[in-house]
Length: 71
Image (cartoon, rainbow, N blue to C red; front, top):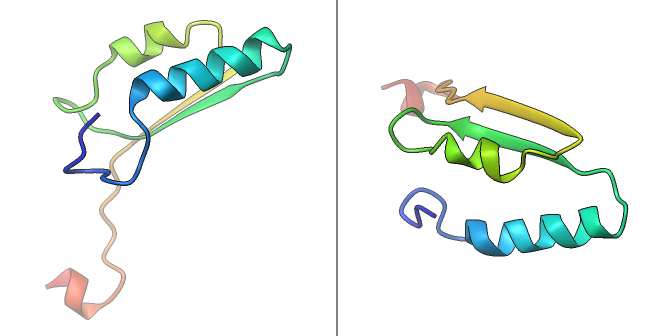
């Protein structure tokens, strides 16, 4: 729910409601957490989606795309 990091995404509550709707209708649902940022991302999110069919967690990757980013 950090709008300063991801200003144009839905909050976790609405994402969870949509997830439950799909699960209740019998869909397989995968969860992808990216980036998982220690100290920012809560590990409680794993408990929220305990019954996900697949779960992927990736850390923060900082890769410069060009000379401007590198500097």
